[in-house]
Structures are given as structure tokens and as C-alpha cells.
Image 1 (spheres, one colour):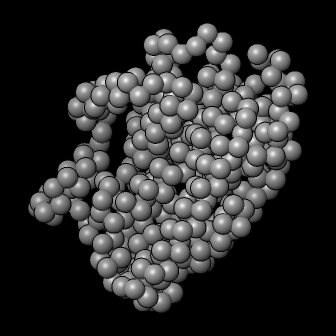
Image 2 (cartoon, rainbow, N blue to C red):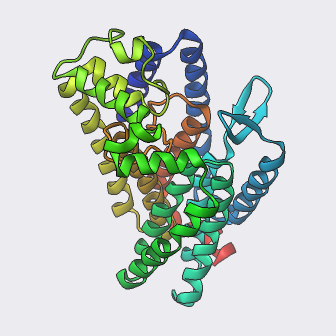
Length: 356
């Protein structure tokens, strides 16, 4: 699994270099080094200690998301960034980590079974950060929280009937989200996805069209590294972040892109294996949450570049440019390795008795 991540990082840096400039490559290398440092530091911390501090981490990030609406600075119309000198971070990315830790803590130390009240509490814990993130607006990061919640609910023992009820309720209230929370450009992207033939008439569909042209231009073997017309001529927007998969497909071609997909398949399979081999409930729920997070990001990012999913602004893990998303991926990876290392000795941990 670690080797797979290293290969993905190498591919990412190469194609960020191809799609952008040396400035972004340098910044990405800095974030990768920071991520590796964070990865090894967290390995020395018992993952059960994250359960002890889960609610505090969650509350702290909720507070940051609230104040971000007032003091955060805006990039391309989205007020989701917190400035830290020469660098900036996106707190909504770290909210994914906090939600996984919090929901796993909630179910691991629930002594009285799972009822409707518990499901309501989980729904509230998920909807509060979702609403704050959508307000920024950042629809992509907000949507990731939903499959995380559903996966942890299912793994914790919630029946299919209740899950279907939750999904149905979400579908029923989605018109309210459309009317009161989504920005005009977000609505335009969704409409453009549902009716692609009419997208150009409404001024939508440019991102999707350029991405499809890039992927189609790659053919079987690709145009060659640094030779993609769509990326090098800058027709493809956000080519080093959300649409980097289209750059890879254009310059590498279909056959080598299949190798990338196999790397991601191997990564997700390894994550599922860690969850299946973990006996301790908290660790198992945490790993399931993180595997769901990675899987949803991969599927959605590739899907939107291929035109089979709406464009919502989700990065490709370990490949797309971005400091916050890179650090989030490394934190999740480290905790997964942490669970794998300690899953056989966790029953002797003092945190179980402190919180049980």
C-alpha cells in the first residue's frame, strides 16, 4: 500500500509539472514532504487516542468553519481558505477526518444499541459541517461527508431499511438545497450534466467538453508527456487540480491510464483488507470511513472528467495539486497504518477503559 502511494505521488508530481509550472511543482513537493513528516509522526500515537479527542477535534473545526465565513479569504468566488503566511489551508478538507473520527467514536462507545435517536444524532453531526461547507461554497467537500456517514452507519450495524429511509429523506429535501444553498454556477453545472446537449446554450458545459476532448485525444498510447494540446495550450481549466486525470489520459493514453486505475484499485483493496482484519470496533469503523472517503473521491473525480458525474470540484487523491487535500490524505493514510499496526494489541490500551 505504501509503495502504491509513492507511485501515485510520483505520477502526480510529473503531471503537475506537465500541466502547470515549476512553482506549483515546488509547492507540491513541499506539501508531500510535510505530508510524509506528518504521516510518520502520527504512527507513534495510539489511534485510540484520536477517539478520546474526537469530539474536541470536531468542535474545533466547526468553530473554524464558522469564523471562516467572516475572516476567510476568497478564491474564485469561494470563501474557503485560511491564510497562514505564504501558504493557505482549506479547513473543509480536514473536516472529513474529524467526521470519521467522531462518528466512529459515537458508535464504538455506544452501550445501549442503535436506535432512531442515535441515527438522528449522526445525521446532525454530519449536516452541521455540510451546511457550513456548502455556504462557502464548496459542494464537493460537502458531498463527501454523506457517503462517509452512510458507510459508517452500515458498518456499525444500522439496517438497510434505515439507510434507505435516510437516502429517501435526503432526496426529498434536495429541492430546498437547490433553492436556498446552491450558487447559480453550481446549478448550471448540474443542469449541464443532466442535459449536456443544451449545456452550451445555457453557457455551461465548457469544463466537461474540454475534458472529454483531452481524454479522447489521448487514444491508446497518448500524445506523450508534455505534449497534450488541451493542457499545453491551456484549453483545459483547472488542469493541475480537479482535471488532472484528463491531462494524464491525454498524454499517457488509455492503456497507461488503466495502470493508474489498477493502482487505485489496489490501494482501495488494501484499505478494505485492513478493515476486515481489524478486530477492534473503533479502528475498523475509522478505516471503513477513510476507505469510503478515498473511494468516493477517486470515483467522483474520474467520473466528472469523463462526463458521467457532475463537476463538483473534488481532487484526485495523492495526484492533484493542493496542500490541504494532500495533508488530509496523508493523515487518513497514517491512521489506517496505525490501525493495522496496533489492531492486535489494542485490547490492552488504557483509552478503552478511560472512555468505555
